[in-house]
Length: 417
Image (cartoon, rainbow, N blue to C red):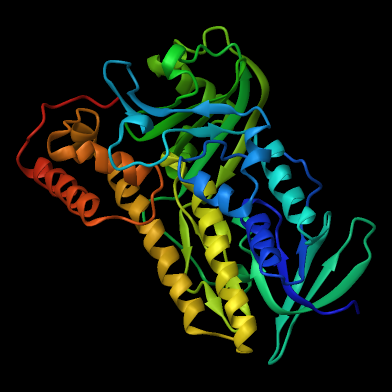
């Protein structure tokens, strides 16, 4: 048995690295157990402007900025046939404080964050597969297996689960609950030769809306683009195709994607991610806090994943630090962290659950900035967590108009295909 730690963190992705760095800033001893060897391939490559706040707080912005990632100034939403589109320009939102973001290759980005936490003094053990955890009155014990097959036990006062979609501790307690109607499959890869936007719009993410599915196109480098298709699992099963064939057929039938991929060649393809959009019934319990995707995951349509993961990890780590100082196994601050995390997720979920409806699309794809409603939408989707009264009532107005549109058309009809 090794020395006891203040905190053990399962997972070294953005959430785990953020939690580790935050705890080290507060002087806590931290052990990170990561099952992979970094750098490693991962999806979720488009960041939001308000990621910058967290980078600054962690002291890692200079490292991220110097990595040469593609600058992202906006997000474009297209109909599948290319007939209509709208652009969200982060630099023109009157409520948005950060004018741009980044498109990142996660292998490099995640490694930067983990090495930063390591540089602050966190101990990182890679290729360490967590097998069991046990919460006792005064400690947490974790069993893991290293790359040589040797099993180890480590102990800490607290455990933070940042295991991502693996959802380690919540799955062991049967806490996962899927959002109704949102069992999806994502099929994706990296391609060269994709014709992306240029000039002032260079670096924009493209979201292409189909009738019951959508594509993402994320420029990572001048000649490297991440392209993915998201559709319902039931629709995929009905196709009776392998994932790559379903992807290729969808490209052929979606003009806004096909026209950009005429000369595309795969760098890597056929990656599949399933069963996302879920929550866990509890995010905290005695000596345990779940953060990042281990707290829950939502449809990536608005690129919220990395930012929500890092926000939850930083706030969760701050709650753990305060709990350690109090000597208690569970505190009101931990519960307050859970409430805040659910509130942050709900801001994006209100857009996501409506995005697949026609009445939402008819307003979203034909925006009017009267009363600066579009600016409020821009602010929310840029990732601002602290809503002012001015942005709050404008968002309420927008969703009221969406409700009215379903019953009494305010915007002209558009065909989704």
